[in-house]
Length: 473
Ligand code: NAD
Ligand code: MG
Image 1 (cartoon, protein in one colour):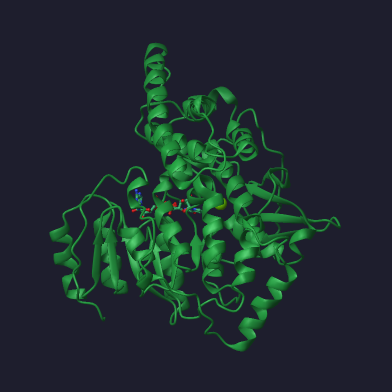
Image 2 (image 1 turned 60 degrees about the horizontal axis):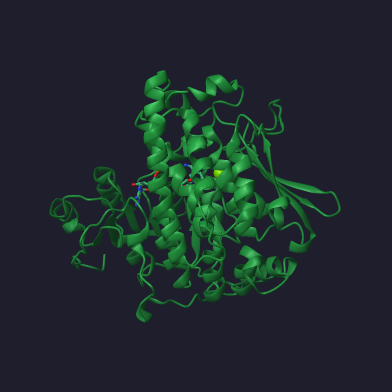
Protein backbone atom coordinates (compact mmCIF):
# COMPACT_ATOMS: atom_id res chain seq x y z
CA UNK A 1 0.00 0.00 0.00
CA UNK A 2 1.61 3.20 -1.12
CA UNK A 3 -0.68 6.04 -0.22
CA UNK A 4 -1.14 7.29 3.29
CA UNK A 5 -2.80 10.53 2.37
CA UNK A 6 -6.22 11.27 3.72
CA UNK A 7 -7.49 13.77 1.25
CA UNK A 8 -9.26 16.95 2.22
CA UNK A 9 -12.76 16.26 1.06
CA UNK A 10 -14.98 18.52 -0.91
CA UNK A 11 -18.29 19.63 0.57
CA UNK A 12 -21.07 17.10 0.03
CA UNK A 13 -23.83 18.21 -2.25
CA UNK A 14 -26.89 16.29 -3.36
CA UNK A 15 -26.01 13.55 -5.86
CA UNK A 16 -29.61 12.95 -6.83
CA UNK A 17 -28.94 14.58 -10.17
CA UNK A 18 -25.63 14.36 -11.95
CA UNK A 19 -24.98 18.09 -12.42
CA UNK A 20 -22.56 18.50 -9.57
CA UNK A 21 -19.96 15.96 -10.60
CA UNK A 22 -18.81 17.77 -13.72
CA UNK A 23 -15.70 19.78 -14.18
CA UNK A 24 -15.03 21.33 -17.57
CA UNK A 25 -11.62 19.86 -18.05
CA UNK A 26 -9.29 17.22 -16.72
CA UNK A 27 -6.13 18.48 -14.98
CA UNK A 28 -3.23 17.88 -17.38
CA UNK A 29 -1.23 15.93 -14.79
CA UNK A 30 -4.08 13.42 -14.65
CA UNK A 31 -4.41 13.00 -18.40
CA UNK A 32 -3.04 9.62 -19.22
CA UNK A 33 -2.16 8.58 -22.73
CA UNK A 34 -3.34 5.06 -23.40
CA UNK A 35 -0.27 2.99 -24.10
CA UNK A 36 0.60 -0.41 -25.50
CA UNK A 37 2.41 -2.67 -23.12
CA UNK A 38 1.16 -6.08 -24.09
CA UNK A 39 2.77 -8.98 -25.95
CA UNK A 40 2.99 -8.89 -29.73
CA UNK A 41 0.35 -11.56 -30.37
CA UNK A 42 -2.11 -9.55 -28.30
CA UNK A 43 -1.52 -6.47 -30.43
CA UNK A 44 -2.01 -8.56 -33.58
CA UNK A 45 -5.34 -9.85 -32.29
CA UNK A 46 -6.58 -6.33 -31.70
CA UNK A 47 -5.30 -5.20 -35.09
CA UNK A 48 -7.18 -8.02 -36.81
CA UNK A 49 -10.44 -6.96 -35.16
CA UNK A 50 -9.96 -3.34 -36.12
CA UNK A 51 -9.03 -4.17 -39.69
CA UNK A 52 -12.06 -6.40 -40.01
CA UNK A 53 -14.28 -3.58 -38.85
CA UNK A 54 -13.07 -0.32 -40.34
CA UNK A 55 -15.21 2.67 -39.40
CA UNK A 56 -17.08 4.11 -42.39
CA UNK A 57 -15.83 7.53 -41.48
CA UNK A 58 -13.79 8.95 -38.66
CA UNK A 59 -16.66 10.46 -36.77
CA UNK A 60 -18.75 9.66 -33.76
CA UNK A 61 -21.23 7.72 -35.91
CA UNK A 62 -18.66 4.98 -36.21
CA UNK A 63 -19.30 4.24 -32.55
CA UNK A 64 -17.14 1.84 -30.64
CA UNK A 65 -15.34 0.69 -33.79
CA UNK A 66 -13.81 4.11 -34.24
CA UNK A 67 -12.38 4.19 -30.74
CA UNK A 68 -11.15 0.61 -30.85
CA UNK A 69 -9.64 1.08 -34.30
CA UNK A 70 -7.79 4.13 -33.05
CA UNK A 71 -6.48 2.30 -30.01
CA UNK A 72 -5.68 -1.08 -31.52
CA UNK A 73 -2.13 -0.97 -30.32
CA UNK A 74 -2.68 0.92 -27.14
CA UNK A 75 -4.92 -1.01 -24.76
CA UNK A 76 -3.00 -1.11 -21.51
CA UNK A 77 -2.14 -4.55 -20.21
CA UNK A 78 -1.74 -3.58 -16.62
CA UNK A 79 -5.27 -3.50 -15.30
CA UNK A 80 -5.50 -1.32 -12.27
CA UNK A 81 -9.27 -1.06 -12.37
CA UNK A 82 -11.52 1.37 -10.52
CA UNK A 83 -14.94 -0.12 -9.77
CA UNK A 84 -17.47 2.67 -9.42
CA UNK A 85 -20.50 1.31 -7.58
CA UNK A 86 -18.54 -1.65 -6.20
CA UNK A 87 -21.18 -2.43 -3.55
CA UNK A 88 -23.94 -3.09 -6.11
CA UNK A 89 -24.89 -6.20 -8.03
CA UNK A 90 -22.50 -5.56 -10.96
CA UNK A 91 -19.86 -4.07 -8.66
CA UNK A 92 -19.75 -7.22 -6.49
CA UNK A 93 -19.64 -9.45 -9.58
CA UNK A 94 -16.76 -7.32 -10.92
CA UNK A 95 -14.88 -7.82 -7.66
CA UNK A 96 -15.38 -11.60 -8.02
CA UNK A 97 -14.05 -11.49 -11.58
CA UNK A 98 -10.94 -9.53 -10.59
CA UNK A 99 -10.28 -11.99 -7.78
CA UNK A 100 -10.71 -14.84 -10.26
CA UNK A 101 -8.38 -13.26 -12.83
CA UNK A 102 -5.68 -12.43 -10.29
CA UNK A 103 -2.65 -10.22 -11.08
CA UNK A 104 -2.13 -8.02 -13.05
CA UNK A 105 -5.84 -7.30 -12.59
CA UNK A 106 -6.42 -5.36 -9.42
CA UNK A 107 -9.28 -3.33 -7.95
CA UNK A 108 -7.35 -0.15 -7.13
CA UNK A 109 -10.40 1.97 -6.36
CA UNK A 110 -13.85 1.21 -4.97
CA UNK A 111 -16.90 3.41 -4.51
CA UNK A 112 -20.24 3.05 -2.81
CA UNK A 113 -23.12 5.40 -2.25
CA UNK A 114 -24.91 4.72 1.01
CA UNK A 115 -23.99 1.15 1.92
CA UNK A 116 -20.81 2.12 3.80
CA UNK A 117 -20.54 -1.12 5.79
CA UNK A 118 -20.37 -3.19 2.61
CA UNK A 119 -17.83 -0.78 1.12
CA UNK A 120 -15.60 -0.92 4.18
CA UNK A 121 -15.79 -4.72 4.21
CA UNK A 122 -14.75 -4.77 0.54
CA UNK A 123 -11.90 -2.36 1.24
CA UNK A 124 -10.62 -4.50 4.12
CA UNK A 125 -10.65 -7.55 1.89
CA UNK A 126 -9.27 -6.05 -1.34
CA UNK A 127 -6.94 -3.35 0.07
CA UNK A 128 -7.57 -0.81 -2.72
CA UNK A 129 -5.55 2.39 -2.93
CA UNK A 130 -8.65 4.59 -3.17
CA UNK A 131 -12.08 4.40 -1.53
CA UNK A 132 -14.94 6.82 -2.20
CA UNK A 133 -18.36 7.40 -0.67
CA UNK A 134 -20.72 9.49 -2.78
CA UNK A 135 -23.72 9.86 -0.45
CA UNK A 136 -23.80 11.99 2.65
CA UNK A 137 -22.04 10.07 5.42
CA UNK A 138 -20.05 10.30 8.63
CA UNK A 139 -16.67 10.97 7.03
CA UNK A 140 -14.66 10.87 10.23
CA UNK A 141 -16.07 7.46 11.15
CA UNK A 142 -15.30 6.07 7.69
CA UNK A 143 -11.78 7.49 7.65
CA UNK A 144 -11.24 6.05 11.08
CA UNK A 145 -12.13 2.58 9.83
CA UNK A 146 -10.02 2.91 6.68
CA UNK A 147 -7.05 4.73 8.17
CA UNK A 148 -5.00 1.64 8.95
CA UNK A 149 -5.38 0.48 5.31
CA UNK A 150 -3.56 3.63 4.19
CA UNK A 151 -5.98 4.32 1.36
CA UNK A 152 -6.83 7.66 -0.14
CA UNK A 153 -10.45 8.68 0.45
CA UNK A 154 -12.81 10.85 -1.56
CA UNK A 155 -16.27 11.98 -0.57
CA UNK A 156 -19.27 13.58 -2.23
CA UNK A 157 -20.48 13.89 -5.81
CA UNK A 158 -17.10 14.80 -7.32
CA UNK A 159 -15.47 11.66 -5.87
CA UNK A 160 -16.15 9.53 -8.94
CA UNK A 161 -14.55 11.96 -11.37
CA UNK A 162 -11.55 12.25 -9.04
CA UNK A 163 -11.19 8.47 -9.17
CA UNK A 164 -11.64 8.38 -12.96
CA UNK A 165 -8.82 10.88 -13.49
CA UNK A 166 -6.55 9.51 -10.77
CA UNK A 167 -3.09 8.60 -12.10
CA UNK A 168 -3.14 5.23 -10.28
CA UNK A 169 -6.23 4.13 -12.24
CA UNK A 170 -5.73 2.46 -15.66
CA UNK A 171 -9.35 1.66 -16.49
CA UNK A 172 -12.76 2.43 -15.01
CA UNK A 173 -15.64 -0.01 -14.66
CA UNK A 174 -18.76 2.08 -14.15
CA UNK A 175 -21.38 0.07 -12.25
CA UNK A 176 -23.13 3.06 -10.74
CA UNK A 177 -26.88 3.22 -11.25
CA UNK A 178 -28.56 6.13 -13.02
CA UNK A 179 -27.46 9.39 -14.61
CA UNK A 180 -25.21 9.91 -11.57
CA UNK A 181 -22.67 7.83 -13.53
CA UNK A 182 -22.35 10.30 -16.41
CA UNK A 183 -19.72 12.76 -15.07
CA UNK A 184 -17.28 9.96 -14.27
CA UNK A 185 -17.91 8.30 -17.65
CA UNK A 186 -17.07 11.54 -19.42
CA UNK A 187 -14.05 12.17 -17.18
CA UNK A 188 -12.76 8.64 -17.91
CA UNK A 189 -12.85 8.99 -21.68
CA UNK A 190 -11.52 12.56 -21.54
CA UNK A 191 -8.56 11.15 -19.64
CA UNK A 192 -8.08 8.63 -22.48
CA UNK A 193 -8.74 5.61 -20.26
CA UNK A 194 -10.75 2.47 -21.14
CA UNK A 195 -14.32 2.74 -19.89
CA UNK A 196 -15.92 -0.62 -19.04
CA UNK A 197 -19.53 0.45 -19.12
CA UNK A 198 -22.38 -1.16 -17.20
CA UNK A 199 -23.96 2.23 -16.46
CA UNK A 200 -26.07 2.35 -19.63
CA UNK A 201 -27.75 5.56 -18.46
CA UNK A 202 -24.59 7.49 -19.45
CA UNK A 203 -25.19 6.58 -23.09
CA UNK A 204 -28.96 7.12 -22.88
CA UNK A 205 -28.46 10.65 -21.56
CA UNK A 206 -25.38 11.76 -23.50
CA UNK A 207 -24.51 9.06 -26.03
CA UNK A 208 -23.39 11.43 -28.76
CA UNK A 209 -21.15 13.48 -26.46
CA UNK A 210 -19.68 10.47 -24.69
CA UNK A 211 -18.80 8.75 -27.97
CA UNK A 212 -17.39 11.97 -29.42
CA UNK A 213 -15.20 12.57 -26.36
CA UNK A 214 -14.02 8.96 -26.50
CA UNK A 215 -13.18 9.39 -30.15
CA UNK A 216 -11.10 12.50 -29.46
CA UNK A 217 -8.89 10.78 -26.88
CA UNK A 218 -9.14 7.31 -28.48
CA UNK A 219 -10.51 5.93 -25.21
CA UNK A 220 -12.14 2.52 -25.77
CA UNK A 221 -15.63 2.01 -24.38
CA UNK A 222 -16.18 -1.69 -23.71
CA UNK A 223 -19.72 -2.93 -23.06
CA UNK A 224 -20.50 -4.76 -19.83
CA UNK A 225 -24.24 -5.00 -20.45
CA UNK A 226 -24.76 -8.63 -21.51
CA UNK A 227 -26.69 -7.80 -24.69
CA UNK A 228 -24.10 -5.30 -25.88
CA UNK A 229 -21.25 -7.61 -24.99
CA UNK A 230 -23.01 -10.26 -27.10
CA UNK A 231 -23.42 -7.83 -29.99
CA UNK A 232 -19.78 -6.77 -29.65
CA UNK A 233 -18.66 -10.41 -29.77
CA UNK A 234 -20.97 -11.31 -32.67
CA UNK A 235 -19.93 -8.22 -34.66
CA UNK A 236 -16.42 -9.55 -34.85
CA UNK A 237 -17.66 -12.11 -37.40
CA UNK A 238 -17.80 -9.49 -40.12
CA UNK A 239 -17.13 -5.94 -41.15
CA UNK A 240 -19.02 -3.08 -39.69
CA UNK A 241 -20.55 -2.09 -43.03
CA UNK A 242 -21.78 -5.68 -43.54
CA UNK A 243 -24.09 -5.47 -40.52
CA UNK A 244 -27.76 -5.39 -41.47
CA UNK A 245 -29.33 -5.30 -38.02
CA UNK A 246 -28.78 -5.99 -34.36
CA UNK A 247 -31.34 -8.06 -32.46
CA UNK A 248 -31.40 -7.41 -28.72
CA UNK A 249 -32.94 -10.18 -26.66
CA UNK A 250 -35.14 -9.43 -23.65
CA UNK A 251 -36.30 -11.87 -20.98
CA UNK A 252 -39.68 -10.11 -20.90
CA UNK A 253 -39.42 -9.65 -17.12
CA UNK A 254 -41.91 -10.86 -14.53
CA UNK A 255 -44.95 -9.53 -16.41
CA UNK A 256 -44.21 -11.13 -19.77
CA UNK A 257 -47.47 -13.09 -19.73
CA UNK A 258 -49.56 -10.78 -17.55
CA UNK A 259 -52.62 -9.07 -19.03
CA UNK A 260 -52.50 -5.26 -19.29
CA UNK A 261 -54.93 -4.59 -16.41
CA UNK A 262 -52.93 -6.77 -14.00
CA UNK A 263 -49.65 -5.09 -15.07
CA UNK A 264 -51.23 -1.69 -14.41
CA UNK A 265 -51.66 -2.41 -10.71
CA UNK A 266 -48.59 -4.63 -10.09
CA UNK A 267 -46.92 -4.02 -6.72
CA UNK A 268 -43.21 -3.37 -6.07
CA UNK A 269 -42.97 -6.91 -4.65
CA UNK A 270 -44.38 -8.33 -7.92
CA UNK A 271 -42.05 -6.21 -10.03
CA UNK A 272 -38.94 -7.05 -7.99
CA UNK A 273 -39.42 -10.79 -8.65
CA UNK A 274 -37.36 -11.10 -11.83
CA UNK A 275 -37.64 -14.63 -13.24
CA UNK A 276 -34.00 -14.86 -14.40
CA UNK A 277 -31.65 -12.11 -13.20
CA UNK A 278 -30.62 -10.99 -9.69
CA UNK A 279 -29.98 -7.27 -10.05
CA UNK A 280 -30.25 -3.91 -8.29
CA UNK A 281 -33.78 -2.65 -7.64
CA UNK A 282 -33.83 0.12 -10.26
CA UNK A 283 -32.81 -2.12 -13.18
CA UNK A 284 -35.18 -4.84 -11.92
CA UNK A 285 -38.12 -2.43 -12.12
CA UNK A 286 -36.81 -1.26 -15.50
CA UNK A 287 -36.89 -4.89 -16.64
CA UNK A 288 -40.51 -5.19 -15.55
CA UNK A 289 -41.56 -2.03 -17.44
CA UNK A 290 -39.06 -2.83 -20.23
CA UNK A 291 -37.47 0.60 -19.82
CA UNK A 292 -34.28 -1.42 -19.38
CA UNK A 293 -34.64 -2.67 -22.96
CA UNK A 294 -35.63 0.86 -23.99
CA UNK A 295 -32.35 2.13 -22.53
CA UNK A 296 -30.47 -0.71 -24.23
CA UNK A 297 -31.89 0.27 -27.63
CA UNK A 298 -30.32 3.73 -27.23
CA UNK A 299 -27.17 2.22 -25.74
CA UNK A 300 -26.74 0.01 -28.82
CA UNK A 301 -27.39 2.86 -31.25
CA UNK A 302 -24.68 5.04 -29.70
CA UNK A 303 -22.19 2.34 -28.85
CA UNK A 304 -22.19 0.69 -32.27
CA UNK A 305 -23.07 3.70 -34.43
CA UNK A 306 -26.37 2.19 -35.67
CA UNK A 307 -29.47 3.73 -37.18
CA UNK A 308 -32.61 3.23 -35.03
CA UNK A 309 -34.15 1.00 -37.72
CA UNK A 310 -31.16 -1.34 -37.45
CA UNK A 311 -32.08 -2.30 -33.88
CA UNK A 312 -34.78 -4.84 -33.08
CA UNK A 313 -35.96 -6.45 -29.85
CA UNK A 314 -37.07 -10.05 -29.44
CA UNK A 315 -38.45 -11.67 -26.29
CA UNK A 316 -36.35 -14.66 -25.25
CA UNK A 317 -37.46 -15.86 -21.80
CA UNK A 318 -34.49 -18.20 -21.16
CA UNK A 319 -31.89 -15.37 -21.47
CA UNK A 320 -29.33 -17.75 -22.94
CA UNK A 321 -28.96 -16.05 -26.33
CA UNK A 322 -27.75 -12.65 -25.16
CA UNK A 323 -28.22 -10.91 -28.51
CA UNK A 324 -27.60 -11.39 -32.22
CA UNK A 325 -26.15 -9.63 -35.24
CA UNK A 326 -27.55 -10.21 -38.71
CA UNK A 327 -25.14 -9.61 -41.58
CA UNK A 328 -26.00 -8.54 -45.13
CA UNK A 329 -25.73 -12.11 -46.48
CA UNK A 330 -28.48 -13.31 -44.13
CA UNK A 331 -26.19 -14.96 -41.58
CA UNK A 332 -27.19 -14.30 -37.97
CA UNK A 333 -24.48 -14.67 -35.31
CA UNK A 334 -25.55 -15.11 -31.69
CA UNK A 335 -23.66 -15.28 -28.40
CA UNK A 336 -24.88 -17.90 -25.92
CA UNK A 337 -24.05 -18.47 -22.26
CA UNK A 338 -26.00 -18.98 -19.03
CA UNK A 339 -27.54 -15.78 -17.64
CA UNK A 340 -24.66 -14.57 -15.47
CA UNK A 341 -22.94 -11.17 -15.63
CA UNK A 342 -19.47 -12.48 -14.79
CA UNK A 343 -18.79 -13.41 -18.41
CA UNK A 344 -19.52 -9.98 -20.00
CA UNK A 345 -17.68 -8.27 -17.13
CA UNK A 346 -14.65 -10.48 -17.69
CA UNK A 347 -14.71 -10.04 -21.46
CA UNK A 348 -14.67 -6.26 -21.02
CA UNK A 349 -11.67 -6.60 -18.71
CA UNK A 350 -9.65 -9.05 -20.79
CA UNK A 351 -10.63 -7.92 -24.31
CA UNK A 352 -9.32 -8.77 -26.86
CA UNK A 353 -8.17 -11.91 -25.11
CA UNK A 354 -10.28 -14.62 -23.53
CA UNK A 355 -9.32 -16.64 -20.52
CA UNK A 356 -10.89 -19.20 -18.19
CA UNK A 357 -14.17 -17.85 -16.87
CA UNK A 358 -15.60 -18.04 -13.36
CA UNK A 359 -19.25 -18.18 -14.40
CA UNK A 360 -21.43 -21.22 -15.15
CA UNK A 361 -21.34 -22.91 -18.57
CA UNK A 362 -24.05 -24.21 -20.85
CA UNK A 363 -24.71 -27.92 -20.43
CA UNK A 364 -25.68 -29.02 -23.91
CA UNK A 365 -25.99 -32.67 -22.86
CA UNK A 366 -29.31 -31.83 -21.22
CA UNK A 367 -32.27 -31.15 -23.43
CA UNK A 368 -33.62 -27.63 -23.30
CA UNK A 369 -35.43 -25.30 -25.61
CA UNK A 370 -34.88 -21.69 -26.58
CA UNK A 371 -37.95 -19.60 -27.32
CA UNK A 372 -38.33 -16.34 -29.19
CA UNK A 373 -41.41 -14.17 -29.61
CA UNK A 374 -42.08 -10.63 -30.77
CA UNK A 375 -42.44 -7.95 -28.06
CA UNK A 376 -45.83 -6.44 -27.24
CA UNK A 377 -45.58 -2.68 -27.76
CA UNK A 378 -49.05 -2.14 -26.23
CA UNK A 379 -48.48 -3.80 -22.85
CA UNK A 380 -44.88 -2.50 -22.77
CA UNK A 381 -44.98 1.05 -24.18
CA UNK A 382 -41.36 1.66 -23.11
CA UNK A 383 -40.14 0.03 -26.34
CA UNK A 384 -42.30 2.28 -28.51
CA UNK A 385 -41.13 5.31 -26.50
CA UNK A 386 -37.47 4.34 -26.95
CA UNK A 387 -37.70 4.07 -30.73
CA UNK A 388 -39.49 7.43 -30.84
CA UNK A 389 -36.74 8.96 -28.66
CA UNK A 390 -34.06 7.38 -30.86
CA UNK A 391 -35.60 8.81 -34.03
CA UNK A 392 -36.20 12.31 -32.65
CA UNK A 393 -32.91 12.52 -30.71
CA UNK A 394 -31.61 15.72 -29.14
CA UNK A 395 -32.34 16.07 -25.43
CA UNK A 396 -35.03 13.36 -25.41
CA UNK A 397 -32.74 10.59 -24.12
CA UNK A 398 -31.92 12.70 -21.06
CA UNK A 399 -35.62 13.42 -20.53
CA UNK A 400 -36.67 9.78 -20.88
CA UNK A 401 -34.02 8.68 -18.43
CA UNK A 402 -34.67 11.37 -15.82
CA UNK A 403 -38.46 10.94 -15.86
CA UNK A 404 -38.04 7.19 -15.55
CA UNK A 405 -35.62 7.49 -12.61
CA UNK A 406 -38.09 9.72 -10.77
CA UNK A 407 -41.08 7.48 -11.55
CA UNK A 408 -39.27 4.27 -10.53
CA UNK A 409 -38.26 5.79 -7.22
CA UNK A 410 -41.87 6.89 -6.58
CA UNK A 411 -43.12 3.40 -7.46
CA UNK A 412 -40.60 1.69 -5.16
CA UNK A 413 -41.73 3.97 -2.33
CA UNK A 414 -45.35 2.96 -2.97
CA UNK A 415 -46.25 6.48 -4.09
CA UNK A 416 -47.49 5.63 -7.53
CA UNK A 417 -48.82 2.72 -9.55
CA UNK A 418 -46.78 0.55 -11.89
CA UNK A 419 -48.78 1.82 -14.85
CA UNK A 420 -47.91 5.43 -14.01
CA UNK A 421 -44.21 4.86 -14.72
CA UNK A 422 -44.58 4.65 -18.50
CA UNK A 423 -47.34 7.29 -18.56
CA UNK A 424 -45.15 9.72 -16.62
CA UNK A 425 -42.21 9.18 -18.95
CA UNK A 426 -44.36 9.56 -22.05
CA UNK A 427 -46.11 12.69 -20.79
CA UNK A 428 -42.82 14.30 -19.68
CA UNK A 429 -41.42 13.66 -23.16
CA UNK A 430 -44.57 15.12 -24.75
CA UNK A 431 -44.15 18.34 -22.73
CA UNK A 432 -40.47 18.76 -23.54
CA UNK A 433 -39.14 21.22 -26.09
CA UNK A 434 -36.34 19.30 -27.76
CA UNK A 435 -32.91 20.87 -28.13
CA UNK A 436 -31.22 19.35 -31.17
CA UNK A 437 -27.43 18.87 -31.15
CA UNK A 438 -27.38 19.50 -27.40
CA UNK A 439 -24.28 20.56 -25.51
CA UNK A 440 -23.64 18.96 -22.15
CA UNK A 441 -25.24 21.97 -20.47
CA UNK A 442 -28.44 21.41 -22.52
CA UNK A 443 -28.55 17.78 -21.37
CA UNK A 444 -28.05 18.78 -17.76
CA UNK A 445 -30.83 21.34 -18.08
CA UNK A 446 -33.12 18.76 -19.73
CA UNK A 447 -32.40 16.27 -16.96
CA UNK A 448 -33.15 18.88 -14.32
CA UNK A 449 -36.33 20.00 -16.05
CA UNK A 450 -37.59 16.43 -16.61
CA UNK A 451 -37.11 15.47 -12.94
CA UNK A 452 -39.20 18.42 -11.82
CA UNK A 453 -41.85 17.84 -14.50
CA UNK A 454 -42.11 14.11 -13.76
CA UNK A 455 -42.39 14.78 -10.02
CA UNK A 456 -45.24 17.21 -10.74
CA UNK A 457 -47.03 14.67 -12.95
CA UNK A 458 -46.62 11.98 -10.29
CA UNK A 459 -48.10 14.20 -7.61
CA UNK A 460 -51.12 14.82 -9.86
CA UNK A 461 -51.38 11.09 -10.66
CA UNK A 462 -51.17 10.22 -6.94
CA UNK A 463 -54.09 12.56 -6.25
CA UNK A 464 -56.14 10.86 -8.95
CA UNK A 465 -55.11 7.39 -7.80
CA UNK A 466 -56.05 8.27 -4.21
CA UNK A 467 -59.49 9.19 -5.47
CA UNK A 468 -59.83 5.94 -7.39
CA UNK A 469 -57.88 3.80 -4.88
CA UNK A 470 -55.57 2.53 -7.62
CA UNK A 471 -52.09 3.01 -6.07
CA UNK A 472 -50.21 -0.22 -5.40
CA UNK A 473 -49.81 -1.02 -1.72
P1 NAD B 1 -27.19 -1.68 -7.81
O1 NAD B 1 -28.29 -0.84 -7.32
O2 NAD B 1 -27.08 -3.08 -7.33
O3 NAD B 1 -25.79 -0.96 -7.50
C1 NAD B 1 -25.61 0.41 -7.78
C2 NAD B 1 -24.26 0.88 -7.26
O4 NAD B 1 -24.19 2.30 -7.49
C3 NAD B 1 -24.08 0.68 -5.76
O5 NAD B 1 -22.71 0.48 -5.48
C4 NAD B 1 -24.53 2.02 -5.17
O6 NAD B 1 -23.89 2.29 -3.91
C5 NAD B 1 -24.05 3.00 -6.24
N1 NAD B 1 -24.89 4.20 -6.32
C6 NAD B 1 -26.24 4.29 -6.17
N2 NAD B 1 -26.63 5.57 -6.33
C7 NAD B 1 -25.51 6.29 -6.58
C8 NAD B 1 -25.26 7.67 -6.81
N3 NAD B 1 -26.26 8.57 -6.84
N4 NAD B 1 -23.99 8.07 -7.02
C9 NAD B 1 -22.98 7.18 -7.01
N5 NAD B 1 -23.14 5.86 -6.78
C10 NAD B 1 -24.40 5.42 -6.59
O7 NAD B 1 -27.28 -1.65 -9.41
P2 NAD B 1 -26.76 -2.74 -10.44
O8 NAD B 1 -27.84 -3.74 -10.69
O9 NAD B 1 -25.41 -3.22 -10.06
O10 NAD B 1 -26.65 -1.86 -11.76
C11 NAD B 1 -25.62 -0.91 -11.93
C12 NAD B 1 -25.61 -0.41 -13.37
O11 NAD B 1 -25.32 -1.51 -14.22
C13 NAD B 1 -26.95 0.15 -13.84
O12 NAD B 1 -26.73 1.19 -14.74
C14 NAD B 1 -27.59 -1.03 -14.55
O13 NAD B 1 -28.50 -0.62 -15.54
C15 NAD B 1 -26.37 -1.67 -15.17
N6 NAD B 1 -26.51 -3.11 -15.44
C16 NAD B 1 -26.80 -3.95 -14.43
C17 NAD B 1 -26.93 -5.31 -14.68
C18 NAD B 1 -27.20 -6.30 -13.57
O14 NAD B 1 -27.27 -7.50 -13.85
N7 NAD B 1 -27.34 -5.88 -12.34
C19 NAD B 1 -26.77 -5.79 -15.99
C20 NAD B 1 -26.46 -4.89 -17.00
C21 NAD B 1 -26.32 -3.55 -16.72
MG1 MG C 1 -28.80 -5.90 -20.32
